[in-house]
Structures are given as C-alpha cells and as structure tokens.
Amino acid sequence: MANSPQAKKRARQTERRTEVNKARRSRIRTFLRNVEEAITSGDSSAAKDALKSAQPELMRGVSKGVMHKNTAARKMSRLSSRVKALG
Image 1 (spheres, one colour):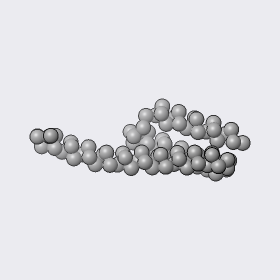
Image 2 (cartoon, rainbow, N blue to C red):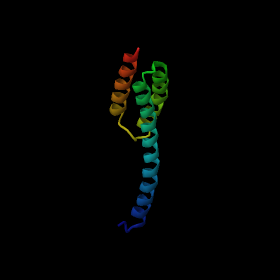
Image 3 (spheres, rainbow, N blue to C red):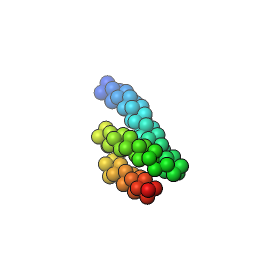
Image 4 (cartoon, rainbow, N blue to C red):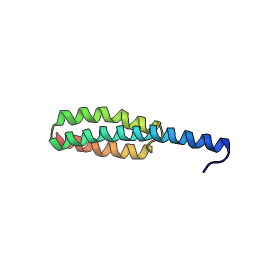
C-alpha cells in the first residue's frame, strides 16, 4: 500500500482515471458492436451509418490513450472492408 502522500495521491488519481478509461472503452465497444450487428443483419445503409459514427469514437479513444492508434486503424480497416463488401 502507498505510504507517502504523493503515492497516496497517485493511487487516488489512478482509480479515477481507471473509471474514466473503463467507460470510454465500453463506449467504443458499444459503437463497434452496433456496426457488427448492422453487418450481420445485412443492412448496408445502417452499417455505413454505424461505421460513420464509430470512426470518431475510435479515434477519440486513441487520442485519450485508451487504445493504440494501430489497433484502431486495424479495426477501422477491417470493419470498412466488411461494410464495403455488403454492397
């Protein structure tokens, strides 16, 4: 356990940041799940709309440090190719 005041403060900050990051990660996953569901339903326009709303959310996760930029780029690439294949 943290003993010094600085270490105690860092522990408190870590708890807060963990909660924020958890919420962000969950939000990103929700947007990605919406795209997946639109793809499996076969609705091309819904998939495009879902992908368009998921893109900024993924990039926001990158800028906030929740996700690595290459991971987000890979996810975007794979999803967009699947949406494109729908027609």
